[in-house]
Image (cartoon, rainbow over all chains, first blue to last red; front, side, top):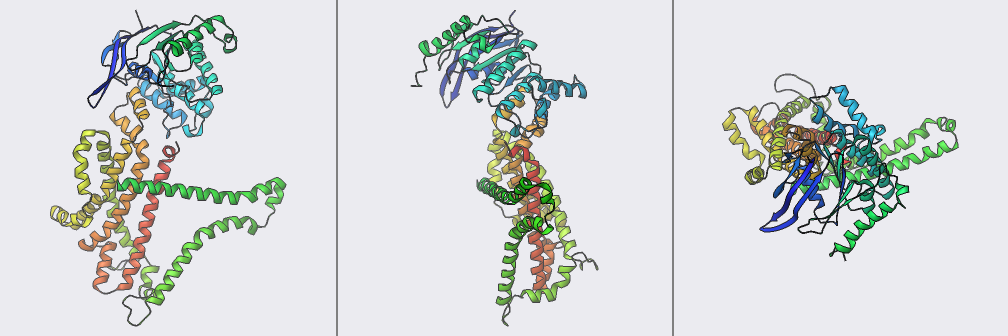
Length: 263
Length: 314
């Protein structure tokens, strides 16, 4: 039995009589605990696909099934870590995570348990020290950590990451990638990540879903990354499997599905 | 549109002030830093006058120009109104005739013989009720038309027409409806103050970033939670701009309304003074109104800056 099943999903947007087909016949099955990256050139509809899984965007035809139940609206069991962190600027770091925890566990956990759970998740991303700071007072990487903590705190069945490190510098990005790998290893969450960074995809993923260029983007290829975990960034640099996987993704993106408009 | 642009100007003004203050703060901070470098006891041993001087300087810099302006205006006024044919009293005559009004705002010697402070309080009470209602109803209606496209299509044209009706034009109608001056005056305040609140709230809510809406959707916040946890905080800067314009307008309207409805308020006092040719009293009352209006405006602005501290600093 599949955990998450994306079944013949098409998506088209209509604007003033004109119809743009964004996604065409997307089929994907994801197992519990798997880390899947979706990679493709910008504009290929990978964010749309993530929004469909999140339930933020309705499908045109087809369906998304999570544990055999159809996804029709957003919900905390499919938590999203947004590209630009989307923390509420008027709430402290603690309250941003607290908003999610109180909503999701308001009925099932006591006040003290919820407090512990908020702090547990902040500590998980090493942000416990900044609990009383507001988002404007912390760096971009820290904001994204809090965004991840908020997502994890909902105890989602699937954590959806929409280019979570896209706006960060290379060093911060590497730190956060390591954090996400650790969290994935210790909690065993199912995670789907959108990215346009080949190294990031190979380093983090069990499978890489490569999408063709839009309009009418399809899944071009799915690559299994057969690297043992835990993975170490430095050791992988010269690892043959790593290099081969990297090469396969690069070839897909820059040979067979070159982004024509980006000349 | 006009209200939005006012708001833009106010915001830029606010920024300008902030920058100015920062610059001043830097000027102040420099000597202190130097003192620390030399030695701490030396700094403590400085004479009081030396330590006070930066503070005194900033007070003078801020207070002297307006005081000077007022003095110049009074002087010019004194000269212009001193002629024998002058129809308006000069400042010295006002002081002679209306000294008790200025020095004793809270005396009470009968139902109509009371100090201006009491009258202002009566007017303020009407404004508080009318403006309070306008704030609550305005934010709710603004939220409705900001959130729902259909509500906006239906209500916005009506609001745009109604908001151009001058406050006093509502008075006969409300007198006919309420048959009493007190609720009529309050209604006029309400109907005057509500439009900028509605329109600014609606703009603020239409400008809530999609990200925040997505967060709310993923968390499955219900309508009430969304209103209090996302909508109001996110639109707070806009809401407070509307409230600030609204409180100014209601203070404008109360004086005019009270002139017509009578009673104890400051507006009626002016009308009464005019009927008994006490021009000096009128001028004193005008100053009272101006000062109170200024304080009201600053009060709402201050509350706004405290409440929106987090939202603005994104």
